[in-house]
Image 1: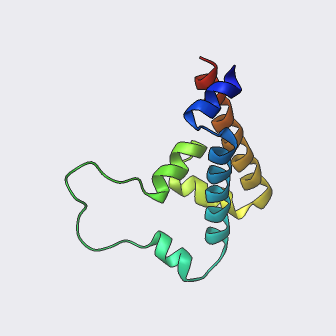
Image 2: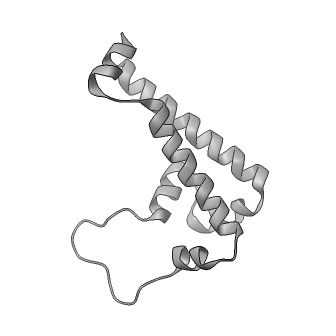
Image 3: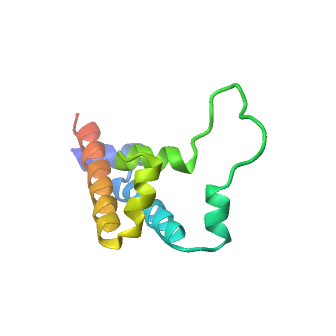
Length: 104
């Protein structure tokens, strides 16, 4: 039944989990490097943000998925084994949440 519903609405848990996992892995890779991508990701633009609803930033996704504030996640990235565990936990939680929604 659950697989039928997933096919009907075009929801694939594996794809959603893979995207989340890859984004978190890339974040870890960039913060361990010292190249221009890290500078860009950390950089700020002069001026203020628009008054309307704000677009999600990388920081927002990392905070939401890991439950860590941005500074803590930057420190966690330095320890690869710890970061891998955080990424796996975040991916498993995403998959569990999606399965719970579809099962309902």
